[in-house]
Length: 574
Picture 1 (cartoon, rainbow, N blue to C red):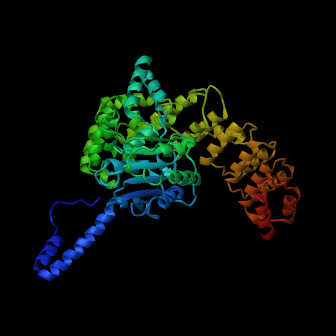
Picture 2: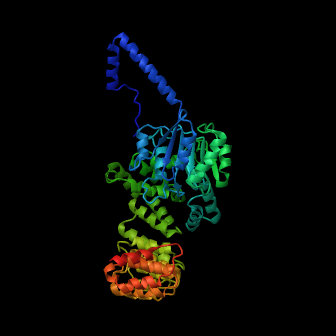
Picture 3: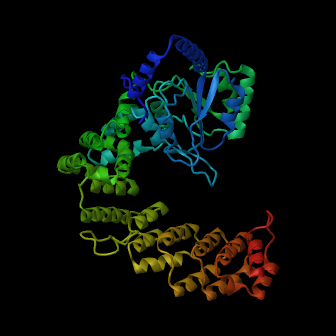
């Protein structure tokens, strides 16, 4: 929590006051003079605007602001504290108040500002920004903002991020609403909720006069800094921190889709939605109160639950074990579990979801709410998978979902009451979905698909084998031989990469791949083979004839030394 003034003097202050009254007059005059001088110094510093920077990727933009703004008018505070995950909360505890905020980081359009550096650990979750904006636990950090600069792609993109409107309309139509009524309801929800990046940033920075961002691709840090430098040369610093949109700044970034918006105001149509969103993050509310709000949503227009669904999931995921056992939350959860009308409407809506992944997530939340027992959850998942298999098309994402749902083999057998329908078309994807559920025949067909000339089939096998790798050495030899017989293609490169992730140690399989090396007509195929061999048992392949084969038959690399060279060096010294 941020420190608050209680309005009552603390004991330490009382002691200081008594000591001050007991001092002699000359000493008092000296102290008063010193305090007045200090006061003037504080007042002079108070005239400076505080520029807060959040640097999770490039520091170029913030550095240009720092170089261009005079120190006597602006002080800079970097909020990110390297090595600690709670740096934003730390800024709240320090009582920092920002007049200007600069956020530099890649933006995924939904959840995070992040860095492209491999070793970077700092990132800025949008949910944390919403917590700071909504909660009284940090009332000062954003309270006096006049300007926000968001240096990330799509930070002010006006298009809906999740594209849920068509999905919701279809779900409503399948639930019994007419097409016209479903479309009318979706239009009303879209107008009230507004789930674009622009809408979300306007809600986070409510009442902020100016928010700068990008409606599409933002320039990289060095480019943005260069443009900022030209802008500051033309306008000095007189526009920064005034809370007025700068036509000059937008003009300098015109080629990069910079745009500006103002923070949400109470008079805006979406203000009510922001108040609802804040109930998920406001730390003044207990978990039981937040669950009560969720229950209210579930009793309301069920289609709106779709728009809040990610936040509902996030709420349950954030609960600690202590919070889950709190009597107030247990009572609130029990009350929700006994609401059969809300349960029936929720499950009907979930079963009409077009996206299997969303349907599975809704089933999981139904279990958390006490609306489905573990056995009923498995039955619902099998119902969803049955519907998936009955369709004409199963995607790579669908196979990944089925395998992930059955990661622990809980769906492998005897999951009454549903029986899987035979697929209308026996494709690699259908076989992989069945194999994810423990089908031995399905697995055999997927292993064959790994050597298919069809790259889509190989992709399916790649996803399946991520969850169910090859462990039998006979199977590995058969698959390796089949992959070695493939004609050089992207499908073969992908299949070899899949084998490489198995860390092949079987000598017979390794020799098969070594024999394939001189026959390869593509440097990518040779590199894929090298990728397998370099991860293998070097003692098994570090033979003079293997090294000679690699040296004599390697195809010329178009971009200098590569993995093949690394393999030759390693085998030469093994």
